[in-house]
Image (cartoon, rainbow, N blue to C red):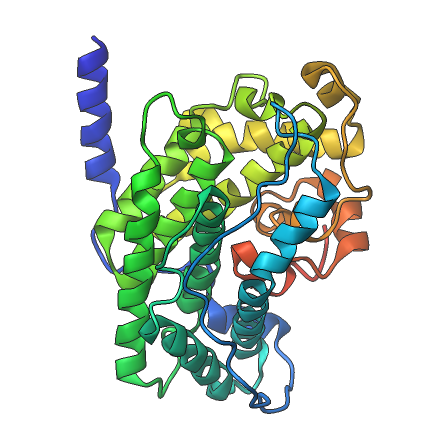
Amino acid sequence: MARLLAVLTAFLVAVLAPSGPLRGPIDVGARRALVGRALPDPMPGPIPPPVRDLRGVSYYTDANRSVADPVSKEGNQEAFAPLRAFIRQVTDLADGWMESRPPKPAYAARALELLAVWARAGALLGTANQQGEYEREWTLGSLALVYLRLRDAPGLDRAARTDVASWLVKLAEAVQPHYGHPGRVSSANNHACWAGLAVAATGAATQNHALFDWGLAQGRAGLAQVRADGLLPLELDRKALALHYHLFTLAPLVMLAELAEANGVHLYAEGDRAIQRLADRVIAGLRDPLPFAAAAGVTQQLRRPARGADLAWAEPYFARFHDPRLVPLLATARPLRDDRLGGDLTLAFGLPDLK
């Protein structure tokens, strides 16, 4: 019976998989019409030197990975500061392309120029330790989502587009081998969701259906972890950071669902609406973390009020579901950005009227 169900599931996934051109989760023209404004020309500047090797610093000190050593954490921040500066520069340019009204393709062209320099240098394709592997998957998600915003801008250099697309595929192929291993925690926890988003977004950005489908499969592995009560057992194991890591898992799942919806796949409905069960539990936890403390067995550590990357996922989620509990959170925290999700999420998804 289990084998029959597995075969049937694989058949249904194949039937429901998109077969036409793959689209990004954001209609750039529609967003520009809604929230665009006059912007100056993008300022030229130096291109950050490409980063090839990814050697991070592991900073958790306990078995539950819930207690961070501040010195080690700062060392990790320093190790990846040049990479994160590059990501911020590229996402800002992509945001400028989407926001500029009338549209200024120079923003998209400059972002593509930066991406092409890194692509031609084989950036991020060198050696990586475990923390570096995580950084690679997050960075791939950022850059693929950025590329989806700008790839259709007029007048872009064709050779640069080809080089960037090829590079993104190589990065996705470097991410894939670390996932899909039965019994490995990272194949089912938040990292499976981030890897799924990164590879699926790369598939959409490069019209690679195999990558897109692989990314959805990883997202579904994450959905399968959502219990009937909306909790994630692997993230509850993070003890004091359980609520934080529920948020950190929800973010890529929401963006992956938005990407899937843009391509006719209704991921929000799958797993008996698993994403909505998780979101419902997280939103309640943001208002009152005591149930999370009871479930995890320890008081929760979370920046309050939630803002920035902790809450950026709420922009697309609210735009789709209009959960009234999110209104006061969004109203006080905007603009919300998460470079791992491609930049400014208020700009990309936010409804001007929070009703």
